[in-house]
Length: 402
Image (cartoon, rainbow, N blue to C red; front, side, top):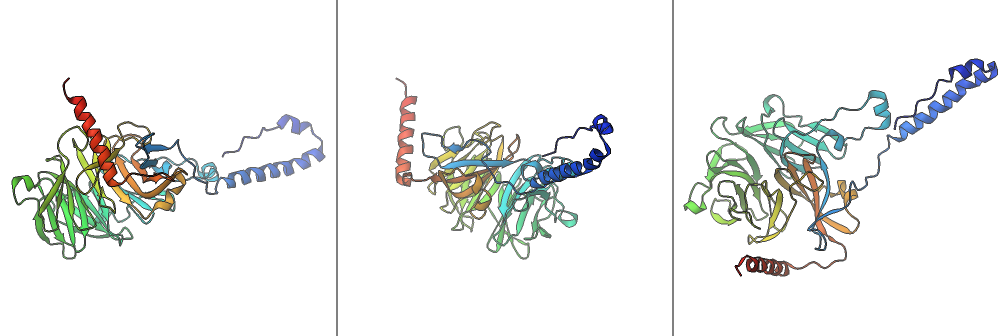
């Protein structure tokens, strides 16, 4: 808050007696002190309040499963510049994400691959907007597309222009890089146990590296029957049993392999109906191994169970809170709930976070809570699948000629 300007009182002051003039500095001092208190009050940390009316998916009267909480697009969405600081040094210039794709969250920090810049770091604890400090010198990035983070804080950034997967430690310092530039185009990298798995769409496969030596061990997706092979893999994720999931934009599917590269199943199919894909992109899995898959054409995230059945979807195209404009990546997090609890509706119980990037619009990094309304009975998976089948049957009946 910037204090109101005081009038000069020059004419009145010149006509006042000397005693009154001697009292004037005290009045000014009291006014300055009051203004300083007002300014300093602006330095205290504000209590978060809801930024908008609650937005739920699915919408009422259906039972809510996902609540949109808030979004981040630039410096002003996270940094809290006090009124005193603004008064002294002026308003900070806003810095915005340009075209984000990959996103991950670890230890109170959101890491965003800004494909036209570098990896942005949104520190939720310190409330600052910055950049990955190790991405200079040997760690310099050309076009970071995707980022994944292991439980120990090691970060793997896929950079197709640099032609390598660049590794940073828990302190965001450069460690090493995998792969030879020019021989491939890495677009996503995920570490699992002692290996690093990298999607290479130009060669139509996933390359597997030894985590320690950096040597390539084998490839996945280029063997077996034609129906079991990859075409243009772009995004990777693992479930808790160690199965690898691969988004394949050439097949319009998400394909599941075991760690030895054996084909297990495919999710979705080309089309514009529920459970189909038009432009599949980022994927993630929750602790129940439900698959979350972004579709850039539908501007939504579809959720499938282990058997490949569609459970629900959320989001739609637009530039309002909760909307997407060319969504790219999704990640799920159970460890940083405390930073978003103030935004959760009092009648909704949050279980975990879902972060989704949009490449355009005013809402680039979107944060959702998955959970349920307090005191409400939710159907079991079997009951839910029955409801879905009944809905599909009604759709089929509507489509039949009369």
